[in-house]
Amino acid sequence: MKLIDSHGRSINYLRVSVTDRCNLRCIYCMKQGGLEQKEKAEILTFEEIERIVSSAVKLGISKVRLTGGEPLVRKGFISFVEKISKIPGIKDLSLTTNGSLLEDYAERLKSAGIMRVNVSLDSLKPKKYSEITYGGDIEKVFKGIEAARRVGLLPVKINVVVIKELNDDEIADFAMMTMKEDLNIRFIEYMPIGSTDLWNDSRYMPTDKMLEILNSLGTLEKIGSTGHGPAVYYRLKGAKGKIGLISPISNHFCSSCNKLRLTSDGRLRKCLFSDDEVDVRTVLRIANGNSEEELEKLLLHAVQSKPEKLNLDALGRPIARAMSEIGG
Image (cartoon, rainbow, N blue to C red; front, top):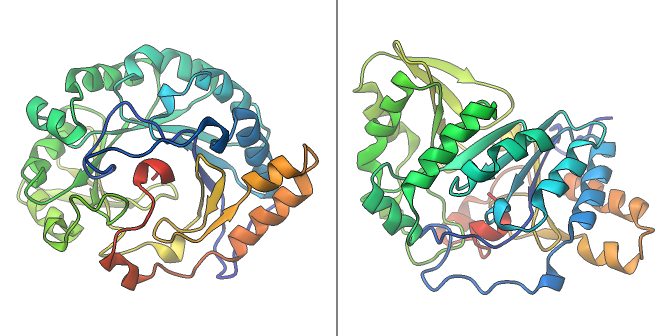
């Protein structure tokens, strides 16, 4: 079965935020004072998430990414992954993590059914990384990346949110990592989501400016898009790895959008840049377990009411929810 929205797009990808909690406090993800954590009762149980994912897969979802917050801080996560991985119809099960706990969990994640990981890493400099994350230890992330590669969670993708006057001076350093290592380094435009402490237009760098820097490093071959993701990939001559550019603002990929997002508190989010959401938690709990038909109706409604494109007017103000709540 295929899920087709009202604009003719095939929706086959569900991003699931399993928690709003994180052991880091990245400055573009959370406000300086942090976020008020949701009560336990507000967060979906793993059993509820499993039911939603099962219903979504029956309708046509085949690709699931588990995100947060930081997924690895939630107790029982590995057992949850084992159950999700056994749902018939899931062809791709992946994880987004900050990498700080990955060294300890990589082997168990692989055994449980995770196929590959994306690691958020916005600086290669220990001091700057600590400042961006409010105290994170970059060595733990490096060890986590190595552990992921060792156990076969491949390809390992490194996500770098580029912010002017913060880490744009490290674009070349990140890109040169691909010369020696088979990594996918992905540069992402900074987006006005959640934190109002840092965002303003002057901190935004479009991917065409990033591309100018990359071209200065040597011969850059355009590979194009791989898979069904938003990144456009390039390779430096002689490199083992690839460089991806993700441009949600300057060259948005709405026409090929294939995603729904499930927040940790049980809302289906139709678009990353819209706070228009569908409440599935209430139906799950009111129906007392007899909710599969209602769940499918809500999933279909969320798909059919996806906007055709992002609201560019909304980019002048930050999206209300923090990235840690949405799950990216």
